[in-house]
Length: 228
Image: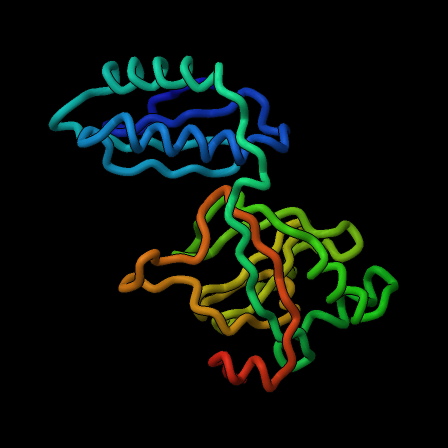
């Protein structure tokens, strides 16, 4: 990994090979070690696709000390095996796939020349990795969707995408944790709460976890608290 200064009180670690599919489990391992080893010097550490942003307490340490500690930590982790993907948490989330909740289902099916049912099946059969959480609290970037349902972002984003909407953009999929503007192709809606600052944990998943979608009908969707 390489370490660069990101701001007056932060550094960012980059994996040298961003294309390695094992990166996400290695990043999770490194992030956990950072949180354990830096103690009160650490303010936050945020992992993403192939990087970790480390923000430190500038009143107790500085760039040089943090970089030295991180290099020591990375050297130690380098000799440890990369954790298996199967050791990460698997989160199953219900989704109501329907024209009322997924207005872009017909568009994706027509684009790829397959049935709407095939779009739903392909979306559910994949177990996705949480690569990053951002854009909004609880918005998890999940990959990778089957190539037969991958779609580019909408040319014109919608002014409002309802809370719980499940979308596809290129080979990523995600759930909108709150109502907001958005340009992803919407294929269904999830009734689960994805961000609650008063709960513990505040989100059902973290970077490095796995997510699988489970199809439900309208009755089940409403029973779980979903709204149309």
